[in-house]
Length: 71
Image (tube, rainbow, N blue to C red; front, side, top):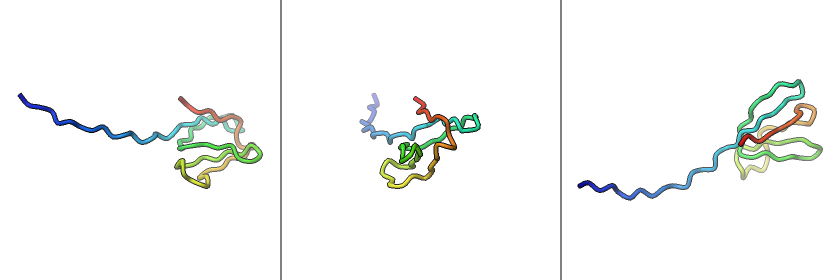
């Protein structure tokens, strides 16, 4: 009878989140990022890593209507 070796499970990496953005002209788009933060004046910033100190994409309130986190 063969025995299976014990396999230690690894803690999975935190998956990036997907956000649905409704742009000012009405069309929807997807953004994949580790985190999103509302900055000064309603500007939003998307970050590639939770430890990033500056966003890789910044959108002013003139460019979007809504941003929703997809669950």
